[in-house]
Length: 283
Image (cartoon, rainbow, N blue to C red; front, side, top):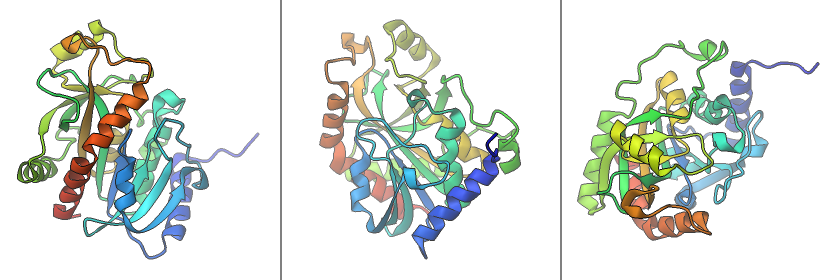
């Protein structure tokens, strides 16, 4: 039988491997760049890139447009560690495998996590190309990365998810958006496992629950971040209207293409918003 490593041992091995490659770089802000949003990593200065496959115990990304690498360097005057692409449950990853890079970031000294994604709009006020600041979330993936014995060795298994999305960071984001003239709503995000899109009946139910946006990521990352005391800022790019909202289904012959097109049109505003937030963070 193969040797079984504990979660803590895996995190130690991964963080030590990354630290060796980073040299004297000490990131304090972590970025997770979702579908179509990876190009922000190209603006990181003095960058070191580390493919996910070179990190011990790290899974590789298989999602379209997710490059699958860490990029560390200077952005907005701060040392950041960006994931250019993320891991999803629908790729076959467990909840702990999705959360793993967040725990690794924390081990490396990252204090603030900025997680981003492309999401469908349930709120009929929103339009593709707008941004939504996550005020709260509904974890409807049916999974939680803290389940089991191993996570309790990292930090206590019971912890509060009140204000999971840091109020001070949300205020910073709203200020940056207002000053730059960028449309930034604030709402509740609902995360699903995927990979199938939602039915119209599900969207109607989620609307009644108070959800404003929906997608297939983020929740497990944020749970892991709060588990180890990281402050979190979450921002979604509205890539489409959710199924049945405005009688428009999100599905087409090229769903990924539609998301990438929307992200490309919003790229300048996205970069301005995220960099502006990083510049004002006290991490």
